[in-house]
Length: 274
Image (cartoon, rainbow, N blue to C red):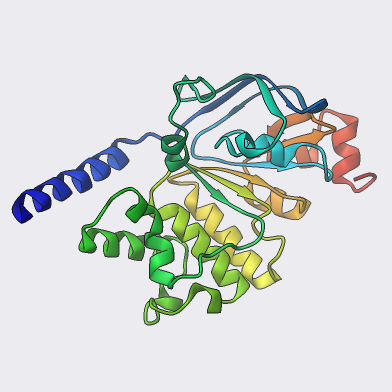
């Protein structure tokens, strides 16, 4: 029985490795998407395409719908009372809102980093290993290797490698956020969503996260919501400006910040409103 268990476990690990190696970075196509919370129309008919291997920033004043829109991609809005969505969101050509979609599987492909760091009250190691263990992986060497890789990707390994049994809650705010990014990376998603990931951090920690985002786009498709205009201009390849639930303008970041097509966009990025 023990030999059979080991063979089964090796097959499970091999399948996960093979799946991750064969993954392509994923293109996102959005067609006429509308969102309501009861009678409130939060998103009003948005069309856009998000390119793989890029960083796309969502900007706009508070309450404009950018975080609601972001959370459509991993179906986090499903938990909100009164939520209703129309339109199509396709990832690699597959509509993620079809009834047959396995939402848990979808969320393995689409990682999420929140505004405030949210480490579990566990050790640093257990935080990063959590997603792997939830998937049923038991191979200790595989888990250890994946945890080390994720911590290195998140630029945290050198700071914590001698204290992996230490509580994650003892880390600084910036370290906690990088730990949460490592936790996301450990299960090797294709897409990473970030909702104001640096708003609670100091400038030094913010700079580290921004450098990290720039490096990660080589392997991942990243979408980030930010209120920080300078941050959007520094780290993103494309920028989408939202206002009152509508997509006002979407273009290459350089164009948005130097030669926007819409007066509303110009007024917002120059600080005339918002």
